[in-house]
Length: 112
Length: 114
Image 1 (tube, chains in turn yellow, cyan):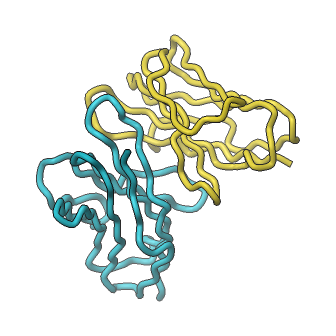
Image 2: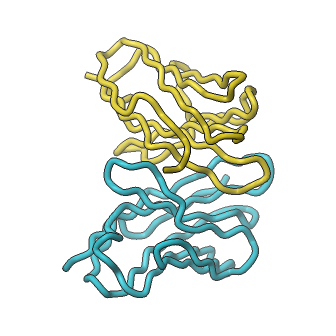
């Protein structure tokens, strides 16, 4: 158990819908990262937050957004969903001053 | 920008044989390097990391990796494969400094044959 909690584990939704994925980082970790894992794109970095502020952006679509709340949990919002958004979405957290990132179990999103 | 290339999307070894998973990186400066393992329906677990200390890094479950700057490589090895090692393995790179996100290779699926 990495200490990073993601909910829900599975999500099935229709095209055009909007979903919210939730991540609770390890206790005390200020950094949260979101990654997408798909068969065609592999593991890709989406976005990073540090103590409530956006720190870095990767290949995140405009239809996607994220935020980190004062209690440090983070949410990834995916809207106007397309079939191609079906993927495993991982959250990771990292202690300040270290090089390691600890990953959650992921949320498997299926868009039908 | 940094990138990672994992040679061989599928590797099969017999139980007890040497495991060698290849990783080459491209980076303008020496980066931090990582190997992660992903078991079916699981998240990513850190096996080991290189952070510019010793070039031979030992990790969990008997795995080790050697950083070779001249070859820009960070290959993962294990002397004797076990059935429980069957999983997907990802090499990742991270630049030093403020850009702390990981860039992953495409992964290598390891099959261990009885």
